[in-house]
Image (cartoon, rainbow over all chains, first blue to last red; front, side):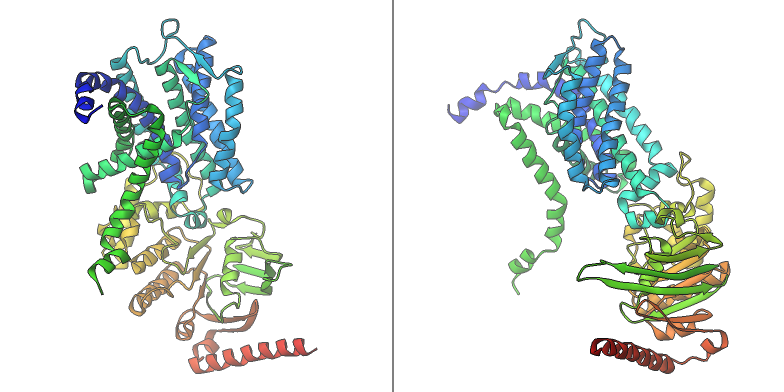
Length: 314
Length: 265
């Protein structure tokens, strides 16, 4: 197929048609990114638990809705399940001295079995929007966008309040300077457990939202969640700084984290529209995250590096 | 006020890196004592301060502060009694948090941190006042991230943070060593002022003999994990740097001699 034929085969109308779906799903990933923001940016830990707890959230939500629970109650239960998963990682890290990244991997690994058990030993469970009352569904995209945006806004406000309180400040201080925090009487172990719990609670909540949106929970639905979450956080930061510059405050940071999820997913929609093999998506995402993670470093290198000195010549 | 009762600490026991850092160290501080601590590298000065602060548990002995046995308390539980300033100006403040947020964290040192606002309006006013006393213009930068401040400014802020909630004991661990001479002098002057105004019981480590003589009401010299010289009052006032250096050299040599004696046995 020639290049001309390839471009001729692309249907712009089809892309436009797919964008709203991308936005609604992007908001859900944006909510997950808010959870990941707590560990990645505030606690300074890359927490790999989320790949498991995202699925846990989906599994718990679907099973409880199938069991007759109202969707909002099932979602709350998913949040609690996520809190527990995060707590396990936190305790492995603080009480048993396992490095944070390894503690997260262990919890995530064990959650695979637990998630299978939650779903009655089947790899996926469907929950039909025709039979059950769901909070959001891909069948009603405008409503899904509205619901997702409202939940995201509520979470952002909640974050803004909580991280401004004494306890929230102590949590931020723990991630920022643990030695100082101890000297000021903050129990940093407790703060780490708390932060990991909160983070995974929100990740599980977003997993519950995605399961409702797509109409099923799948044992692999959380695979790569950490990478997508990091992508959203970083994309949000870079774009937020580009737009707001020095006016970027905590509210802006949080909002752009959620928006980062949307942008990430819209990029995916475009990439799929360009007929990239969907099996290559994970490679594509990893490359995007690597690039965005490298941006701050490369920017610093531009102003001061040995390579620059070499180019200039002694 | 502070009672160290023959405390000992050995690092890496039973290994080739075994180091007896504190060796039956005893020290009594009266309320309001401002003690300067000198000694060579590895004499145990910082180790003593870390033992008091509870960075790790001691192997033997008891630590009593303000009539309370704190030997078994972890670091964060001793924080309500102790204010600290570290050698590294980066260590005492949270760089990504605002100046006023840092002060607010310090104001709540050792208190339970709940869901009330982290910084209140009333506090802001009082922070503005205390920052003004530093004379560094920081009162106009209260919402700036502390990471943007210079090392000297950060150390001044850390001092303020250590005394914002009056501690029973102030620990200054070579807190001017990483600063340029002019800034160091300023921070030292500020330390004097804060200690005097609040009548704080203070332990200050320094490598500068002149500073050690000029500040405080008492001077101790450490070697091999315990105190080998303790002068106070008038005797301290009449100390000269020359005398101190001589004593230091003499005592170090004696220590070396005893090592040789041990080895030759």
